[in-house]
Length: 255
Image (cartoon, rainbow, N blue to C red):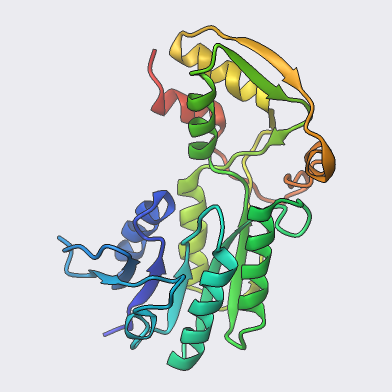
């Protein structure tokens, strides 16, 4: 009987793709959740835990050798990750796999800086580790476009570009890494095409049969300069995802 793989963030978008892949690989999975639930799959167990407070972490890590750390939010990722790795070290975990974001070390925004802090906590934990930096998911761009489409005039930040990647492709890569040996910081994973914010909004509106005025705006400060410089992109990747934003829209959005 193999040890369970502990998955944080297993109830989110990425976790929803990761869990069935781990089960297909024959692994049992323990999922951290603030609100534990019953599982219809005997190979998946949901356990209560709060990474920010640390409550329940030690019990959740009992018997675990591999941790797949997917949990994240708008803030606090560095704190939650430090709590996790401290407990993982006590439990004798042998491999931590972490999903970070492209630009964690270059984009001067709180979210990216927290991701970088989490990366460092893992790298300095003494536990063998693997970190994958991925681009923004198509799902995130869809959420942004949906919210902006509710405005009578859509602001379009000039120079801001995205290289969105399909969350299912990221999930497949993470499972591959989790089932393999610790590899440190691996190659970034981004999508096959780069889009300006205006392109994202126009394609969404067209898919929904809507029309909105758009107004160019400039993003000031260090963050604006970082985005205009493409610090959130990986343009020279040897391998990229295959599913485009257009593919995703065709699947998710109907006229």
